[in-house]
Each structure stands twice: as C-alpha cells, then as structure tokens.
Image (tube, rainbow, N blue to C red):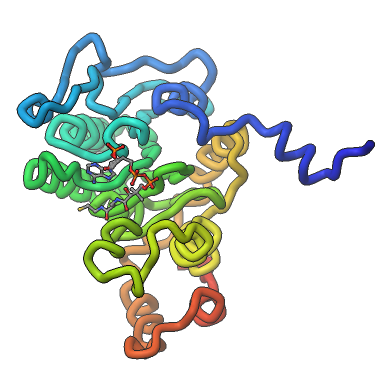
Length: 287
Ligand code: COA
C-alpha cells in the first residue's frame, strides 16, 4: 500500500517540538558550535520556589548558549516549556535579559552577535509575580535596544505556546517564526476561561483555541513572519534566512499607523470570527 505524500512527509519530519530546550538550542546552532553559559552546573536556581514546596531545576528552565549561525557569532536563549510551563521567574528572566544585554554590549562594540529566542512559555511565573514581571520588562527593553543593531529572531514552535509578558517579547522581535502547532496570545486560554467564564472561551476546546491564537491564524493575520513545519531542519533554515530578510523594514511594533487602522476597522461590540478576521487583516508583507 502506498503512503500519501503528506503522511510520508509527516512521518519523515524530525520534530522540533519534541526536543528539550537544550536540544533545540543545539539543533538551531551550527553543528558542534553549542556552548552553554550559566548552565545547570552553575546551580542558578530560583530561591522562591522551595519556599512554596516546589522542586527547583538547575537551569531554572532557561538555556543560554553561544555558538554560530552560518559562521556568525550567535546567542540562543531557549525556554524549557516542560518546567513550570516555561514560566519566567527572577532567575530565568535574569538569564534571558542578561544574554540580550551582553549581545547589546557586543553590538555597541562593533561585534554583532545574532540573537535567537526559542519561546515556549506561559509568561510571568505566577509564583514569582513581581520579580518575573520586572525581569520580563528588562527583556523587552533589551530587545528594543538590540534590534537597532541586529535582527532579533524569535521562534514559537509549541507545545506550550507563548503567553503573557513573553508574548510581548515575541511581538517586539524583528522576525517571528511559528509552526501550525504554536499558540500566541497575551492571555492564555486558562486565564480567559477563569476570568471571563466558559461562555467566553472553553480552555478545553482545542479547535477554537487554535482558530483564535494558533500559529496559522497568527501568520495569516500578520502577527508572524514565517509559518514553518515542525521540523528541526526547517526551523533552523527559517532562522538563518530570517537574519537575511529581517535586515530591512520597520519592526512590526513600530508600524503604529497600520496597526491603528486595523483596529479602527473592527467593531468591538461585534468582534469578527477568525475567518472574517483573516479577510480583514490579511497579512502585509512590507513595512
Ligand atoms: N506560571 C506558573 N505556572 C504556569 C504558568 C505561569 N505563568 N503557565 C503555565 N504554568 C504551569 C501550569 O500551572 C501547569 O502546571 P502543573 O503541571 O503543575 O499543573 C503547567 O504549567 C502546564 O500548564 P497546562 O495549563 O496544564 O498546559 P496546557 O498546555 O493546557 O496550557 C498554557 C498551557 C500556557 C496555554 C496555559 O497554562 C495557560 O493558559 N496559562 C496562562 C498563560 C497566561 O495567561 N499567562 C499570563 C501570566 S501573567
């Protein structure tokens, strides 16, 4: 019996989503170039989680790695979605902000380092509240400063997605890559259901959630720059080409006039369904 081409392609793919944060960083960087900074043996763990009887992780759920991308110096910050939902606390947030700030210092000295963010996160770590928020604000500031020197490339692959303050980090990136399995939104489904009720959103309704905030919808409505397969080689290639294509044009977050015009076309009392939103906000390609 012959295998349909899509099934054969699906079976042949080398899933990026199934990789750990560390494996993702290894696979994105040029082969053999991965070198971890502030790694597990440095034991930079959250001081706040043990006070809440939560087991810490030796890297606090964020992997920072230096290496190269097509021979150019690069830094990858990769969030482990499997640890505390990829949430950002004081330590993991400081690792992210510190990596970006060092890249900014290097860029200022004329030695640009290509920054890549592999985002898989439920946002601010609720158990570390204000400290996580403060760290995420530093991440935002560093992205905005750094993208003036070198494109900041972000990837949301799945299975957690990217939410809360870190969804703003994705929005600030010069170039955002998503897969069909990705989710991207300010409020996660759990929070929407909890705060606005089941009638607003059923957090178990996967089809509805992906139709609203899934990677395909975010790409089709212009909130992501590339939609790629869940395949390590495809994502690595998309990251490399992003550094070439993201060089020109204003970052999305500076396109205030076109974003305001999009909002003005919507009647908030009767918000459009996902398909209608795609027609209304068809993605723009240029700046
Ligand atoms: N802080 C702390 N823990 C978090 C978290 C956060 N911001 N986001 C997720 N988690 C934890 C969950 O509590 C859960 O922990 P448990 O396994 O001990 O129960 C774990 O991560 C996995 O989350 P879960 O909801 O079971 O997985 P999911 O794949 O169904 O959904 C999210 C993942 C991120 C979409 C969902 O958890 C969500 O909507 N989170 C809220 C996102 C948000 O609005 N953040 C804004 C915070 S300011």
